[in-house]
Length: 331
Image (tube, rainbow, N blue to C red; front, side):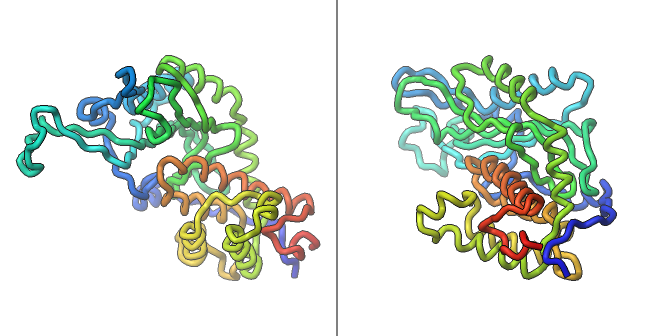
């Protein structure tokens, strides 16, 4: 029996009813859900201390992205943004200095969040890939930890993507040309041009083709074990060997999650014979990525896409790959 096969089999269709019953968040670790209205009305805006100039708020970032998305897709109805935040920073107004915390009134408290991630789903624009419904999604990440708030105001960093959300599991599908991971802007008005440029460079058909291709290849139980063993080994490789190997972006706990879900995931686990196709493997990786902190979340989502694509290309073109058993390439 061949160690790796191109597989031709009907896709299992998973309906929207199942999706609703098993709804989950696009990111979960160390985050809480908040509304856009909460960010607008209840959160203070941090400033650059040297000149007291305000930062671009999370609300402005999300609201402007919503406006741009509506212009890009004028005939579509956008879902309200799903917003997740972490690393709350608490404070109090000057008149409450020295007051015991338990005696503080609500109007005397101040808060803001260091990190924020959001997605805007456009369900009217969807595709079926490998039996799964993917909805067009635009989103972004902002972390104030990347800013030097003790200096004068400078260009601020944002991350934005356009891609898809898998409605089976709410995993995000982030592609190379649909992700801008180092946007530097001085005002919120500059964001519109950046998102417009991103939408122009994003090749929707290329991403869909890559996702579709993933289902054409599978690993048997032994090959999967070899792969996760190499994933575990990577962090212990000598530096010079790491530099010639596809860089690993996920951590050991996330690798353990992939292994666990290989056996137990309802939608993307192994087949009865122990085999798993690379589309399911990709979704195990993006599922494990939900445990990432906000600031590394999209970068690891891109890793999942590029890593699985690299496995596909190596197998398809018979090219050596450190993560794959050599026998797989030779068969």
